[in-house]
Image 1 (tube, rainbow, N blue to C red):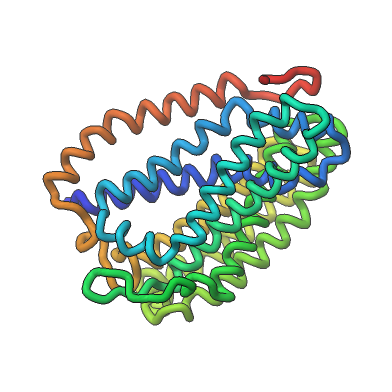
Image 2: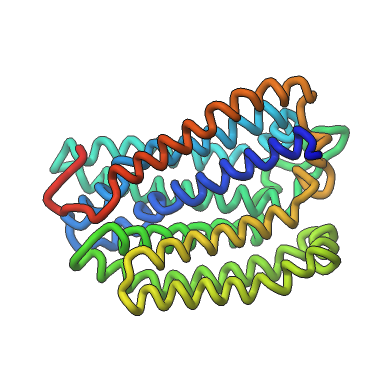
Length: 333
């Protein structure tokens, strides 16, 4: 029978993965924003996510809030280690959100909000990637508190992870726009998706090669049974997904490239999960050690069981209502 701490770890992992997928493509749109050929194209790009972008960020709140509520020890250790990239990410999201609302309310100053939207999206993605890289490379812990320095998070590996996530989000954004738009903007984003796919695959390969050397526990996990099965299968799975993505772009399909890009993120996320389990913070803090008392976990789980299906249903309904192509002549503002 699964322990409550393991169930909660799965819930938080699901919330984080959902956030990465859903907010990833609208951050990707912001990353690609300056490359649009006309102001009208930028309007269409933004309109493609206007009905859903607020809801997408719900999952970030759920992941962060859930970590604080049910894994307080992990939260208290992680935050001092990555205060700076987290603050950068949150401030970037604030600038991005303000730009999202205000660029429609001015003509003379629209260029400024365009810069804020692009900069906020790019910095937010980069901050998330650096945070991931810092967690993967390990956080020193002594007597259940963070024992590192203020800038330990800033390493070549964490910067590489940040760049990889920016490029990956741009791929999600390009394939989303391929699915949601028509005409010149669709052709432009479809042409961008091919090189972005190749760069994403290259960065996935490089980060994957370097990850086992961040800590001996990763080497053991990836090259001993049963983890070695995943290690052998992953390259083939990634190659298949990449071929399907390429094929979808070549045959000018709308949906296939986007869902293949999502599949790449899912496979990578599963790999991170296999590397970490049963640790919350490898190699020092397990999921069970980081968790709150079982009574607190059980109490919180009741709320999660009720609210999670509601959030999922609302999210699915929103995407269903606003399905299909964007009309360039319409606006949700």
